[in-house]
Length: 165
Image 1 (cartoon, rainbow, N blue to C red):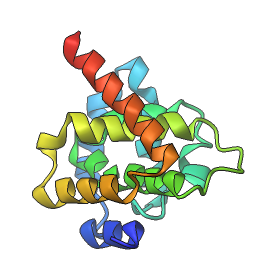
Image 2 (image 1 turned 30 degrees about the vertical axis):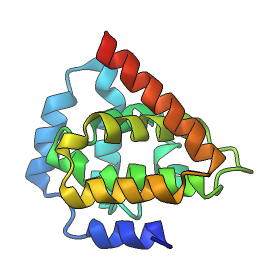
Image 3 (image 1 turned 120 degrees about the horizontal axis):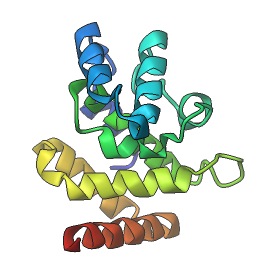
């Protein structure tokens, strides 16, 4: 896996975008939970702009939102609308491990990435075989990467803590 972004694009088609009904279901699910308001804001934003998962970036689309969207990875496996944007989280993580955010003011991208790794590990059973293989390949590709090792260590520790509690 020399180019994880190309593999990500091959595994997760950009089109078709989620339909209006899946958007409405997602909004209804989260609209009345105050602590979920970042999810509603994200959904409204990407739906109104008709952004594909690949077009949605950390710098231009997620970071500028008013709410703390670092909780987004916790919700990407809940509804079909958000599931479509799961590759966005993975794309941000890959770019982070490749060092693309090293010299920029990029907010709390590190926490976003740690939460993405945690969710992919904690809910691995919800991933398809191809998605699990992709995550294994990412693990192998970045195994010696210091940013990856640090993020993975936090994600694994958090998973252990959640399983104990």
